[in-house]
Length: 226
Ligand code: DX5
Ligand code: ZN
Image 1 (cartoon, protein in one colour):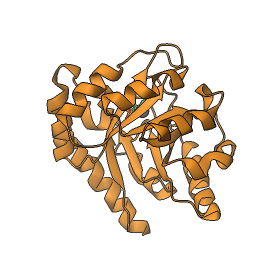
Image 2: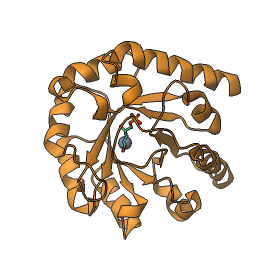
Image 3: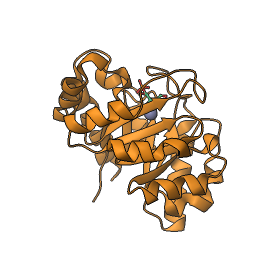
Image 4: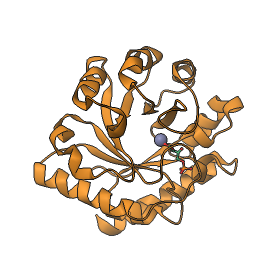
């Protein structure tokens, strides 16, 4: 029996104290660390790259979920593997040859994920769903933490859950953007099980307490439906 999991997104953490922030989020119940990689081209913001992933790898035993918001992701997949990434997801919108990108991630021994922006239809993914470990539904336009959840993302999560059932697949459904106290129950009830949260975990400077409270709310919603 699986359940919901919290993936703290370090985008909203204090980068000068990253190891402490990650440790606090782990004590609060985070089970995988979500790492946002931005290049200033695919999204209008720049964050971090393989060197920081390499340092994080030494600071935690939790899996590192690297969300690549970059152009030409294939050029960097080997570097993220070397840095110690465990999961790597690429954007449907950034990959001309998505199948090849996913194969490359698998070839480097990592778990492949595909991400869709709010304006991208879930059904476009049907043919590659059998090869992914997770599908990440963006519930904000990628680039920044602390944005407002886009409500129609719930329909996309539900559609993915329906497709998974229809096709007899086992990929996980991950949601990213605006997941917080006021939205988490709806997100869980729509069918997501991997919950990325940045601002709601790190925004107030109490990562352990805030992670735990968010996870408790998510589990409560989960129990109501399963
Ligand atoms: C946004 C990133 C998210 C971000 C979510 O482009 O992909 O992972 O950290 O932040 P919140 O949870 O604050 O919306
Ligand atoms: Zn992300």
